Image (tube, rainbow, N blue to C red; front, top):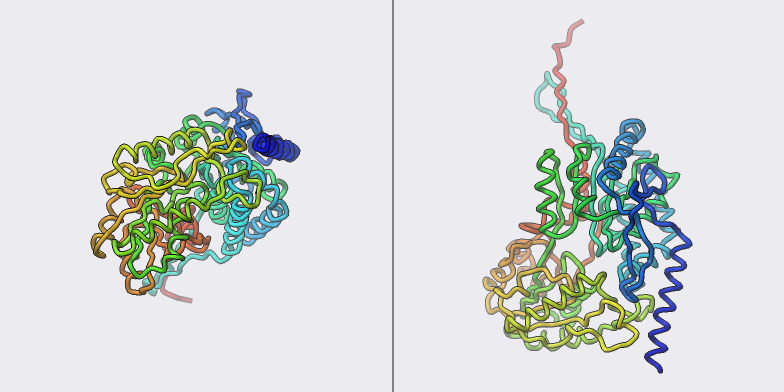
Length: 506
């Protein structure tokens, strides 16, 4: 009777939340400053991963709809936005930030219901998205070019100019944060944007765009929905999109890059990862175990830079592993609307099945599953895509669970004897997005940070991720950077101007 009552309470709370969501928006696409549906009238269902029930539908755009959205953005750029000053772009971004802050709780609820993130995590990520936009609003006015002192008879200087219309494709795991990473620098640099959110979690992107109404000229921000195979392909093939930025899997990123090459369009790619965390023998275990757990169990492991490979010195590997297992078993799987919940469901059934498959692969490869990897025995959660956080030991680097991105709450533990072996294990992957280092020795920190082939290095912690610093990977993990001033550079073209000066005469 108790479990049945708990199950009904979860269902009732989520149905109430979905009803609240329906009062906020119809969740059409956002093109030219107004809600827009597809000409085909087709739609895509987005579902609550806790109760496996529909939240709402969004338009299923086709190639013709994408072309119309790009044309709208292009017209806005050529008639209005191209002449807007940096000071005005900064002011408008700050105004949008203010509106988003006023609607923070609404956006957090949307993110929670659409992705399954615990409400506390969703709220923090919405705050992170707003802070990212605020950062680009602040640095927008500080952009400048160079005067080059080359010769006395020459005035030589550079100009940084926007591309015009840029295309952006974001993933389903951090919908609003990813939107801010794309729109912030693109708008600050002076571009109009056409952004496609993932079909599994498009709601916060649409709502954030709606909350820009009356702030930016119509057509600066355009959010289009649909399937990646149709909408994404139409975006990469459209020669009026002069810059593409994609965050997602390495396989799809490769396709985006190939398609963009047809029109000689530059790309920024933030792709997959299989990130190591090296734990040296002097590490403070209480701190480092938490860092390793946060790095793979936060957001149910659906994070590109997940620290999913713990590489631990042989002197402390047993002690470390015992503590990691204890930490994994401490996570509270439950309703994301409960403040005490620390792990929600995976975002969709496909990922749920993928993670289950990898756990079975790990067993078949001979790794030892020390804890987790099961569907929780809780009637209240039986309709959701829940998996208990898993820890594998007896793992070798040639195993698939040590090489392939799982994108779920699965940690592997390996041991090493020497510094050289630790670095070799860490770098023995096609990916290079992130890595962690656990040590109290400064010399180890700086040497390992230099020797590890990854774009992000976390020391004794997982995170934070701040908008001031560039975010990007090495090898198969991508090209270019989100965040930092580097992202502004990706959304601009540089022009050198040579002005030859005559000898002065009267």
